Image 1 (cartoon, helix red, strand yellow):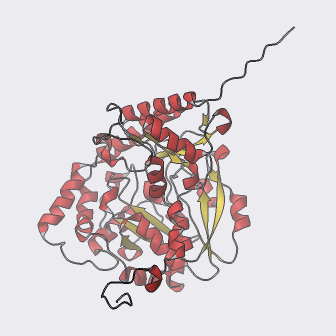
Image 2 (cartoon, rainbow, N blue to C red):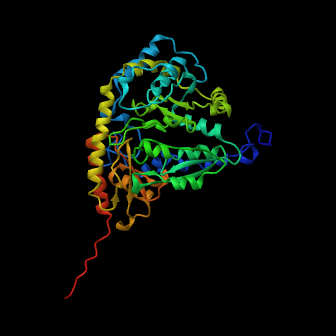
Amino acid sequence: MEDGAGNGRPPATAAAWNFEPNGTLLGLTSLSVRGVLGRVKAGMVVDGDGGGGDGRRAVIPMGHGDPSVFPCFRTTPDAVDAVAAALRSGEHNSYSSCVGLEPARRFFPTIDRLKILKFKLNSRSIARYLSRDLPYELSADDVYLTSGCAQAIEIICSVLARPGANILCPRPGYLFHEARAVFNGMEVRYFDLLPESAWEVDLDGVQALADKNTVAMVIINPGNPCGNVYTSEHLAKANEVYAHLTFGQNKFVPMGVFGSVAPVLTLGSISKRWVVPGWRLGWIVTSDPNGVFQRTKVVESIKSYLDISVDPATFIQGAIPQLIENTKEEFFEKTVGVLRQTADICWEKLKGINCITCPSKPEGSMFVMVKLDLSCLQGIKDDMDFCCQLAKEELVVLLPGFAVGYKNWLRITFAIEPSSLEDGIDRLKSFCSRHSKPKVHQSLES
């Protein structure tokens, strides 16, 4: 295309091209945790080796959910060996089927081997793996492999979307659900999680929100960002990526247990239990013994979407049976043990910071929500301003609460090295002390 002057150059003005931005996409950046953390870190001055501008202090990342960079959370060699063996076999260099390799979806080790945490794996593997906690048997046909849990959310939001449909999501919660729902034209309605009740669902609020156009309710258990674990009784009244990453009194209960009452779509991945988020292997599992998803063509729609979307890497799928079978229980016990230790550190040390309140001790996942009292601070406008200034002054990165739908709260990740966590909270305390309002002293005359 020439510029009209006959000189062979492309047109100089944007109007000359038939391009127009997708307005819906441009508005979704604010719903991205990555995008928010990028803005929080923008003002930091960091040396090339990751230390501060003074050459001494390192950045402490307490805002994201990827502990894989820390030695204490490094994945098991059994998982690495499984992937290496799949690559060396030469059997996983081709395309897989759209729903994923059947051995991955079906295979499952003995029940006693993996009874600490709960995630989901290669289709056959995943089906057997999940069935142990259900009152009925899953098959490989109930499992669909995805490129991580994020793609699973993308697929389900696309499958359930229709004119006028709405989806119920928790607040605070992972706003990726909202981003995908809005992109597909669905309305998002938020029900509250109650901090004074260990972040249980406001069931009365759910009843008030739901109507004939409600297509789904999102339950994340154990909770991100709150670190709570729902009891079986509460779930009976009311995303399991962090499944079995629990270390408190409440034991993990999968939503699939209630599949005979209402059909359940379970979304998960290997990213948190095996601490390998970069491997991008997730799944969708239908827990639906009454066949509702079949009759309403939800299953057919999932398959149709997978036909036109990207697949998880075939060699990762091929590694799943060996990864599940060979991973030793000690690895999971160690991971949960470190999380229990860092959750304790976080809970105890946060008590000493006046402008921050932690409503309940975390019992699962990798996060805790804390309330920020701006009335105690000077020169700080809101949670985003707090996090930006903290990052700049102390090289500590936290996620502002608005990124999970909770203005003037903070989400703290405790899945880091214990010593780094202690250092990070000490820096947080110093920052709060430095920005505290002066105390007003009153003299009382008798």
